[in-house]
Length: 259
Ligand code: MN
Image (cartoon, rainbow, N blue to C red; front, top):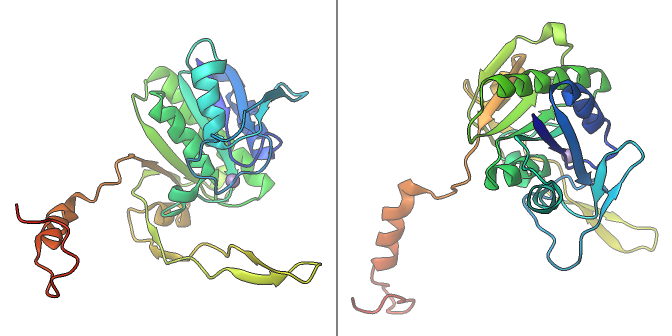
């Protein structure tokens, strides 16, 4: 099995090392990851400068770009044969609910999926090094399964609770929960006396009910959410059409002309 690994925490991340070690027995592993931490990069591609592919002493490749750049470059240019699976992670922090919109970990997997390769994004909900073993074990089980039972064209978002392996309750297929809106930016002052801002923490879980990723992880289960790309809000299409067709009371804002 040809396995392409990436992440958004950077090629030096201990989560990526743990993943590469855990998946080595299941095939030929190639690692292509960003040269620095690009968490929160989402699905961005670098279009305004060239990308360079360089190799670290441990054999990992690293790129001066985003997680999406790494997988895009690997699948469409670097690898002679397309990978059978793309695995992204192990991210050191959860990617649940609305996090998936911003996540570079999910984006790296999604890039593989968009290019026709089955893909798994895997995140540990903490930075606890003792739980890397748990997340790496889960990744290995999923890839092992994908090698014997083809995954098909799927994109799986996996979150692993911060638990020792022996305490994992099992695995649940879930839907994404929702978070409350994000906390405000944090204003600070730099050493030159200028005002600077830090993006604040994500909101707390809002929809964390049974069936969600939040709920599964909270209860000691590995959460596996199949993701899709289509963001269309089908249920609102009729409402939007009506809104556009309505005559504006002021006579202004008419964008449709008579049909
Ligand atoms: Mn990250």
